Image 1 (cartoon, rainbow, N blue to C red):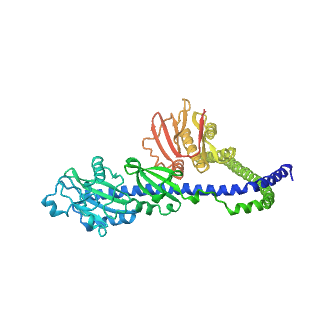
Image 2: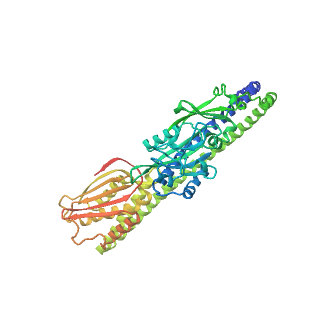
Image 3: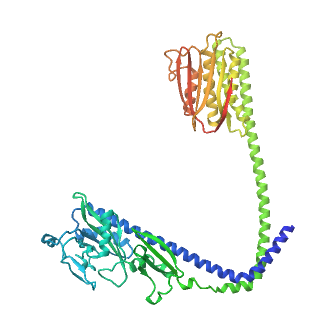
Length: 544
């Protein structure tokens, strides 16, 4: 055992002794923190639930307004069918209402509507005889329990009238200040969300749709779970902190906001201050029973902890040793595989060179120039493949071919066959992936060999072959080969060319999904090859 481990275990024992003394307060502090976290989470959930419910109110009112704007006649039955899903979805909703705009109480209006009513000083419904503008409730859901509210003039109450005027002016949903409910009023304030409905043909207000809430129902249904942990006090900041809802009893009003967590939310077009006050049991000292037990058994726990850590350290040491050994084995195996792969490419290249040498021996015994030419073409193709394998095993990871180096080597070999031309290569440092390397090498070799053999009939003039390579996009490379020779015959068509060289080129272009185009005139021929390649490139390299 090392000195550092001995010191670590001694420190654990000393800390355990101190922790045993402080454990009583620590555990109770944990309970306090847990209670605080519970309070914070409950406040966050309550705030989110209220905001979501208010957003639903806004969406429902907008939907009702759209419905009335696009429907000419709406019966009570149709209104019930349209609003029943909203009644089920909205927590604590008191009623959904439609109130048309009525300018005066005329005989034709009385024939069409029920009697228009308002509330008196005792909050009882009475018949309204006033002339002027009215918004009497014509459709209501639920109708059964609120039948008496049919005909109530929303515009007769100042608070409701203010919200109606605002929604007509802004064409947005408006929310009232705290108000008294017409029916089922138990003294708890209510609110009404209202939206004007426009007659698009006459370009005037058609009426208003409204959603009425009693605040105790809204808060009680929306925050039923949270009210077990928190007391809630809601005031309307837009109306100078007027009370909207309080879960406290009347005799509990003094100092109720001393420990409050206050959040301000946007309620449609108004601002509400939500005061969350934790229940007393979440604020008092926990006096956890287990804190006393920990104080007694602290030393025993410290000894057990020391034993466990010692055992774990031993296991970790053994595991780390196994990981280091396995890592070394994998690195050695990977290196062996890479060396083996390079050796395979090297042997393939050597075998191809042997095959080329055998062809040289065979050429010397042939008298037919056509047969000799066919063997030379085959040698050029074998060399192109051999060069590819050479560049593969020369690559650090044996996973790609360096294109500029390959082009230089290929042109040098071609120049040995025919020295009647010079060449220039402009190619960035591009590496070709293995899937495309051999087919691309054969295509380039065929194009270069074809140019050297057929483009320069006059060896005394300056014959030049230019090769330019550039990336046309992130995943595409463009290779251009331009000679200054005599050009292709007028009737030449690369798609129908019968030479074996062009047959090979067409087949390999299909294999790697490359596109080959050409232009030719008496001053020379240009072939342009575009192929896909995802290996990154570096700075340009110039060959000559």
